[in-house]
Length: 177
Length: 98
Image (cartoon, rainbow over all chains, first blue to last red; front, side, top):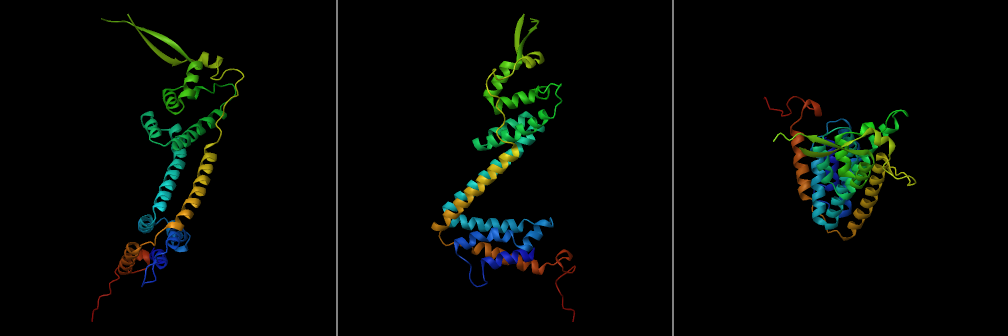
């Protein structure tokens, strides 16, 4: 790890003066990640929080120097969260309770929700495709969790499904009073 | 006597009716999850290239003395504290015995 840190430091300073060129400083994290010592540290699984911490600090310095860089970083982070929403949606279709999955969906941006939906339906479609022709393809979806999640994710679609596949049953309850 | 109205899925109506009227094209998910991930990743990279490239033009000189000082301090610390894992002995401090 010392070699990795020494590499980063050599890109930032020559020992007497610090680099102050924005474009060169911006290239440091990207080039450092390709450096053999840092790649080796990451691959060995012994990655300490030091290297990411140093790179984050450098990122902070760049953000202080440029408002546009700060905004670009925010946009990149948001885009990364939207991409992560695909796997969160995939996980929500197979496990977890609706009390957790529906609020998690609500916290996402519009793009994130779209990504979440895409991940959510994927395992369901895959399951449906694998069901035998003679069996009911709807049966795996006939449960309270899917009904609630479909209602939250695609209300219009859920309403149409509801019209078509749900029958109303009236239960008479004896009024003991 | 009170009436409570609840809705439950019914297998028989499920088989008889589909959610979409006859003649309307069946909608399928436009992208698989993997395709969505690839599309979003490509869009993120393209946006990042454009945005990070644009900020270089109007950026001020960057002050990195904090990062540099922290790195130097960390390296000094690592040189002092050697362990078998980083190639040093059990104790790196060579104590003069004479």
